[in-house]
Amino acid sequence: NSNRPTTKIANVYRGTFIHSTQQTALQILEDELLGVDTDGKIAFIERGAELDRLSRTFGFSPTEVTQLAQHEFFMPGLVDTHIHAPQYSYIGTALDMPLLQWLNTYTFPMESHFKDLKFAHSVYSKVVKRTLRNGTTTACYFATIHTDASLLLGQIANDFGQRALVGKVCMDRNDSVKHYKETNQESQEETCRFIAELLNKKYPLVRPVVTPRFALYCTAALLGQLGTIAKDNNLHIQSHIGETVEDIKLVQELFPESESYTDVYLKHNLLTDKTVMAHGCYLSDEELVLFRKTGASLSHCPNSNISLCSGMLDVRNVLKHKVKLGLGTDVAGGYSASMLDAVRRTLDTSKVLTIQNPEYDTLNFEEVFRLATLGGSQALSLDGQTGNFEVGKDFDALRVNVAAPGGPIDLVQCKEPKILLEKFLNLGDDRNIVEVFVAGRKVVPFAEPTTE
Ligand code: GUN
Ligand code: FE
Image (cartoon, rainbow, N blue to C red; front, top):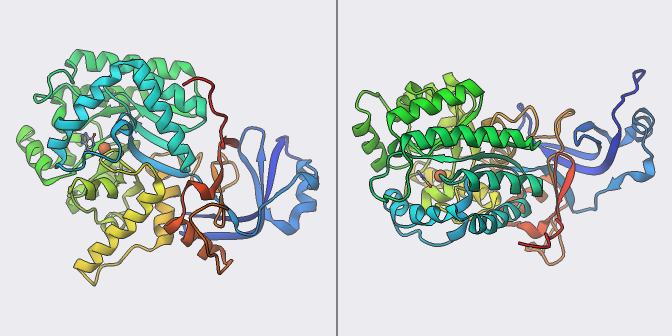
């Protein structure tokens, strides 16, 4: 290798690496060497036998290589494509109503408290720390309608080192809870201020996302304005779509000129290749074709879909339509802030669909692993930077010890990496996640902040 790279190597790891590629849901690399450069990017990933050559080429000492233990492996960080940070304040409760009633009774009154920055700071620090500890290296957050608290969420994600898309929520139509909505003008102006101020911070891993809450709580004027703002600034867009039978019916009544829920967003320039829509349980094949054509993606939130009795997404059909798809916790409609739970609920939902129709092509854990990692990064259009262990991407990774002392897994009979991964996905928790890296920086275990 004649052209000696100018990159400086910060860390080299040796052991088992498990990740997904476009071609294969599960690629297992045993006795592999992965080098991370000082910018946090993957400089090389090659067979262990190449150590001498690599150390000469990249100028590191073989004695500095970190060797993984027997029951350990690296996997890409988990990508939560849909989570409501403020709803962490009531996670694990209030799951006794259907969506629209749930929003009015619990969600809007609780979200209105985030006007208070001290309260916001406390909840947002907790949700960022919890998700990082659970292995979420990238999160796509909804905040609330409050611009300053939404900016604070961006700051906290940056401080703890999480890769994050952060949205100030927009909603200028809410007849049920009068004190939790904005005027059209406020929503527009504050969205622009949010975007400008967040971009101005120059946080390397945090970006703003244009966030109409969903068609039901936005006027057509606002949807159109937000579509323009996203287009003019080439920004991500997130919202909800086709979550329940009831919200679809109401959206049809509100937008009679639109052919479908998807058409409402399409008409307002909100369906782009940087759009991620949550749920989509009831999308027609025609709507999936619109997703495919525009490059928009779906976030599958199975815990929330079941907990609020909303519906069940047919993931196989979405994949057949070649629509990009990631997984989301949808806290607090979903009662778990762990993407491992999203993996399990995705498998459960697929098995329930199989019970209902034995011909159904059930998802396997390898496919769901890909959805939780590479699939999520594709859904968020971040797969140029993260999602698997390709040279040039940021090193976003979990160091997993399946047999972690004090952890939930007692018996590890077989050391085959595929079995270790399966055990971890089905049984593991944060005790098995020994270290978390985002862009090469070790973010878990983290130093506890002195004040909170
Ligand atoms: N639709 C509009 N807002 C919300 C929300 O906060 N959670 C869920 N699950 N669906 C929504
Ligand atoms: Fe949601």
